[in-house]
Length: 330
Image (cartoon, rainbow, N blue to C red; front, side, top):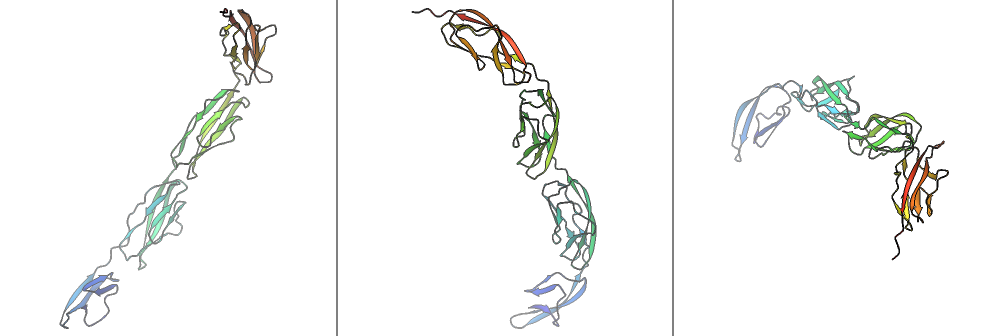
């Protein structure tokens, strides 16, 4: 048996069991304990023992710094303490505030959450032990900007009515599940793909410069923007792509030739210039010369292409078609 003689309560905070003296002393000082050991035959021996309990170390914070954070990114920092009499509690001093979006757990000292605004934040924490002793300490948390940015063209330009080369916008940083948008709306017939960040389409709006803001929003609902200027210039003139010398034909053999122009405003119509005629057996319709030529020879004729503007833009070209003789029979 392990105990004190004469029987009195042990020092507050300590207990004796199975030959062990355990616990957390409640007060400092020098204490004399009379220890008595009794065996199964009721024989015993006793001895006085002096127990010296030192004052606890001064109440202090440990660590004294907190990690930096980033906007919209989960933050985890923990306040700690040494000395004094545990357990401890942590509280913000009146008038102090954590970065917006963060919270302090008073019993663990954990600072957690998702900060919403970048900046340098200073605040004071009050540490208290179980005896009511307090300690104040100023801390600093730096919240870095989110760090999301857009890359892509600053300008999309081209002649009115032309198709643009698709323009790709990309994002660096942020969290997956991006959504693209633009304000104000792009000029008519241009489209920004909300999933891929690609702008495509035709420059059908009025001539001029249009400034819009391309925006990407990530999975944390954070966003980045980039200015874009759409510049629409005078339409290019209607011009022929089909060469003036057409592929040869053969009398009595079906013939087809597409007519192609560029520039102006699609779609296009085609007509023979007044006074021009096609070789016998051929017709002009839906942008094609087709049919079965009936006679050999070299033929010249002029075709006028017109676009869809009002008034229409036109281009004419004189074509030469050589029709070879038919193959002789057997």
